[in-house]
Amino acid sequence: MQVGTTTVESNPNASYLDSRYFWIAYTGAVCFLHLMCSCVPSITATTGWLCTINVHNIGNFIVFHYLRGSPFGCSDQGENRQLTHWEQINHGKQWTNTRKFLIIFPCILFLMCQHYCDYSSDVLFQSIPSFLLQFIPKQPFMHAKRLFGINKY
Image (cartoon, rainbow, N blue to C red):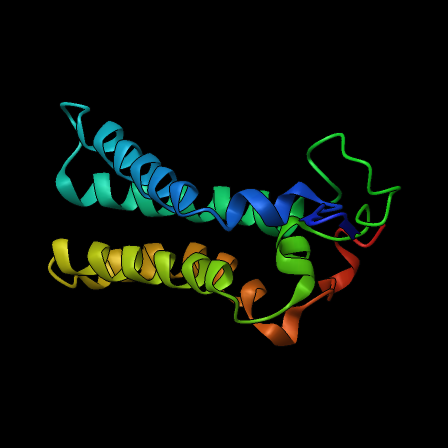
């Protein structure tokens, strides 16, 4: 909506995710998560990476693909209550810079996990399910789809 010379977003989900500062904070939060997962004395480096990638991917799925509606008390008049956070980003427009970042980041994290764990098949099989859980819903063919009636209402 246009008011005077400033643009007013009806949903703040689009505005804060577009910020490069969010991207830096997101990257920093994942680095901090990895630090916390790796700092426990009895945890190996492999377990630290698995903890990082699985916690990130499952959290990513819950926040972006499971929760619906607007997380902020905004004035969208309930327009977005049936949409997930991912579907609200940039008003559903595909392949924007924000969406590309949020698709590429988990891919890079997955590849880093595989590299630092010496491409172990055990690590691959333990990290693939959570990676696919958050990667597949981000694809354009999954926009506004509800599998098996989950999260439909």
